[in-house]
Length: 137
Image: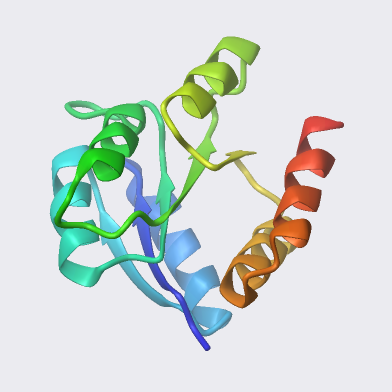
């Protein structure tokens, strides 16, 4: 089973690296370079998971998260922050915006893979373990 993953970041190298990694794990991956494109792509591909950069020009990742949650035409995907903004205020803002998980860039591939495998199989306990591990660091 593979997930439909949308990678949203304004840095092309970040998008490409994540796309290649996620594809190597068997997931179907699309990319968006900004928030507006992310909203269109998320609806078009019916993404299971959206990996969001937080600080982007135009619509930020936080604004995209808000809009994806409010969209009646789009099923609510798992929202994962993938960002270099890791101050406590940044983490709090991401969680307040409705992001489900927060990874600092560069994220550890093994933790991201574990999160996606747990989500894919519907194992909330494993997803919670990723969150607890990240919070403890």
